[in-house]
Amino acid sequence: MTHPDLSFERQDDIAIVRLNRAAKRNALNDGLILALRDCFQNLPEGVRAVVVDGAGEHFCAGLDLSELKERDAGQGVLHSRMWHQALDGVQFGTVPVVAALHGAVVGGGLELASACHIRVADETTFYALPEGTRGIFVGGGGSVRIPKLIGVARMTDMMMTGRVYKAAEGERAGFAQYLVPPGQALAKAIELAQRIATNAPLTNYALMHALPRIAEQPADHGLFTEALMAGIAQDAPAAKERVRAFLEGRAAKVSKD
Ligand SMILES: COc1cc(/C=C/C(=O)SCCNC(=O)CCNC(=O)[C@H](O)C(C)(C)COP(=O)(O)OP(=O)(O)OC[C@H]2O[C@@H](n3cnc4c(N)ncnc43)[C@H](O)[C@@H]2OP(=O)(O)O)ccc1O
Image 1 (cartoon, rainbow, N blue to C red):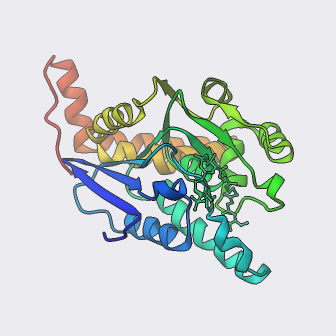
Image 2: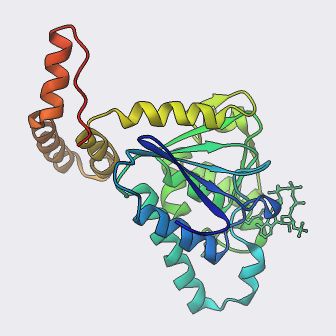
C-alpha cells in the first residue's frame, strides 16, 4: 500500500490506516479517496480489524475544496460514486473498522467516520456538515449513513444552519459510542479493535453485514434473516468451541480462521 498521504501500519491481527495530510487537515482529494478505496479492497490476509485515524490536530476536514471548483454536474456524479465505492469498502468490507476521532470531523470526514462500525471520539472532537452553507450537498454516502446515527432532523438542522456539535453533545446525539479524554482516542480504538479481532470471523461478518440489513427489512423479512444467521452462526466450529469453553470454565481455543 503506497500513497504519501495514507499510511498503513500492521499490529499483529489489526491494522491502523491513517490519513496523513495534516498540513491540509487531512482534506480528502481524489488521490487520497482512491488510496483509501484500494487500501480496504486489498487488506493483507490476517488483518481482522482496522482502526482509521487522522494525523495532526484533526481527524479530517472533508472534501478537498480546491478540487471542487473544476467539476461540472456529470463529473460531480461520478466523483460522488467514487466516494461511495471507497466508503462502501469501509462499511461493507471484510473486517470491522473502528474510527479514532479528534478535532474536526466535518463534511466528508464525518461521512468517512459514519462508514466505520464503531466511533471513539476524544474531547477535542467536533462534528459539522458545512456542505449546506457552502452551497453543495453531501456526496460520500452521508445522506444515507448519518441519519442512521443522529436522525434526519438533526442532520437537516446541521446542513441548513451550519450547526457544530462539540464532543459531549455529539456523543449524546449518536455520533460516537465512546468519549475519551484528549489524545486517547487512538489507544481506545486500538484496544477495541484488538478485542473485536478475537471474535469468531463469522460473528463479525454477521454483525457488519447482516445486522444493518436486517434493521432495514420489514419485520417478517428481518426475522427470517435473523433465524438464518442464528442457525449458521451457532453451527460454526468457533461458536461451538467458545460455548463449550464457557461451560467447561476454561479459555476458548481461538482459531485464526
Ligand atoms: C459535492 O460532492 C461531494 C461532496 C463531498 C463532501 C463535501 C465536504 O466535505 S464539504 C466540507 C468541506 N470542508 C470544510 O468546509 C472544512 C474547511 N476547513 C476548516 O473549516 C478548517 O480548516 C478546520 C478543519 C476547522 C481546521 O481549522 P485550522 O486548524 O485553523 O486550519 P486552517 O488554517 O483552516 O487550514 C489549514 C490548511 O488546510 C487547508 N484546508 C483545510 N480544510 C480544507 C479543505 N476541506 N479543503 C482544502 N483545503 C483545506 C486550508 O486551506 C489551509 O491551507 P494553507 O495552504 O492555507 O495552509 C464528497 C463527495 C462529493 O462528491
